[in-house]
Image (cartoon, rainbow, N blue to C red):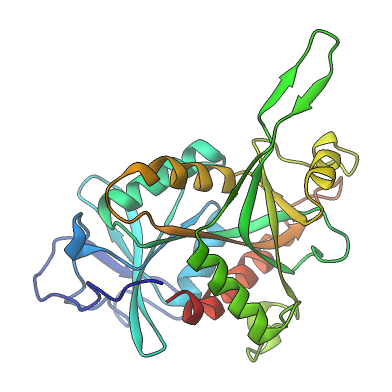
Length: 300
């Protein structure tokens, strides 16, 4: 469970630039709270949720959904901060965008978040390519606490490639929270009470496994798709970052302090085939951000 420790804002000032970001927000009309705490390290400045996005559409959707405000650190990094109330608890939330696609840039973004905010839960939020015809239709959202990194492989002299999947699962308390969400809402979970115009179109939310690697897949007959289908029948979508998130979490589990939990929330923007494109990025990103907000009462 996410602790509420350190949620109360302090009265100290800070020198960070603050700009309100959102559909109807502007720096003059919706400023960030004046007593918003300055980013830093240490137990007394832990934040509750750290969100990593890859594309600008993904970050913009998270900012609008959670009403976050931009901050620039003295070393030139940009973060987006805000507070959200769930179950009468005020959650401190921060989001950032990676420098580029892929596992390595994701791990670097996680390190920046850890160094400046030390969040108690990681969330990777954005888009993915669906590889399951029934569940992973365009616009649907996949909530994942299981990641299969598929890039590890052996290439023998005969030219055969044998992939060696690395399967990691989120901590038990995050799995329980996701299970509770789907117990309450059903599987698939419907769009909920928000108007369809907010989410872009009606969609469904499924729990499932994310396959993660370094390649953009735009071929329905790809050997990667075939491998994932046989490795785990519940692999519903593929991305290029979830493996880095799970690897970063595992490698940091040796630290003395409590290791943050993690979750992956992906809106399906394409079917990882020859029709792959950018047309549905905004829709998928908005749906993923909306599901994140629905999940917050369970994760807090």
